[in-house]
Image 1 (cartoon, rainbow, N blue to C red):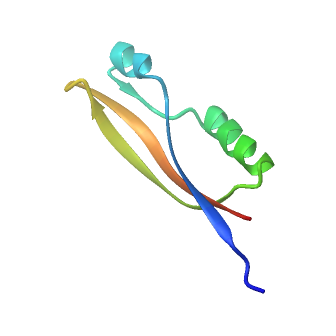
Image 2: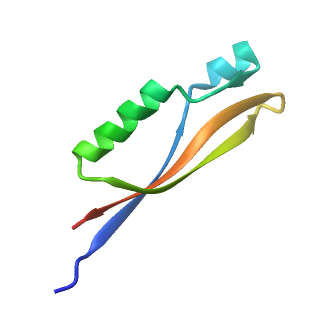
Length: 73
């Protein structure tokens, strides 16, 4: 019997207010860890992730993590 999986794509980023007030917003590692642990408790396992910087409202930069997860169904 072959295993079956489902996948979840999540974009994690900090609130835009940090970008507006600080000119840029970086992902808080503690909050990102909490996000990952919450998903792990639901059975999700990170397959891959990519860090990117997105431009918001023309002048502000915001760091984000594109995270792809899977779990067995």
